[in-house]
Length: 153
Image (cartoon, rainbow, N blue to C red; front, side):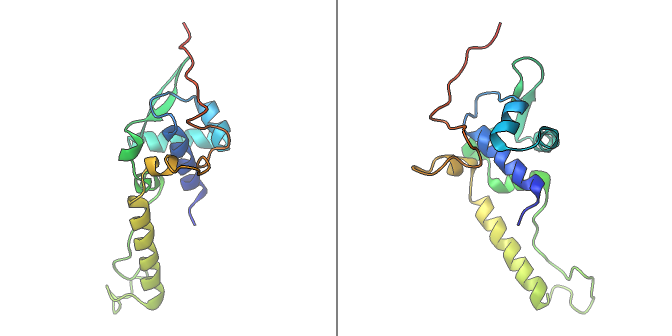
């Protein structure tokens, strides 16, 4: 349903939400989310431009969320890399249709409205706080098994 870029953005944000106050190196994020490193760098740049994540370069650097997981909706993540919009007028520009959408475009608009409603109403916190659920989009990184390592000096 979504592009690969959108999928990668959601995986990355879900993984970062597991330890929102820690910087996660790009290489580790790529490993945990199974996103190719070069592709991930582009996705992270888009998420950073949307002010959803903060990055720090160099030794001890990485990325973390800009806000708490409960404050970031999945729709914000999606909109950082693509746009899901309602159809307001005929996409083909047929003047006699105007805002009176044909059955095909009316259904497409209903689908867009449903996607927007679901993802606006779901936060990163919702993804990571379901008891008994598997860790979202991350194979081995879990909040329960994470240990905070001392910074290197």
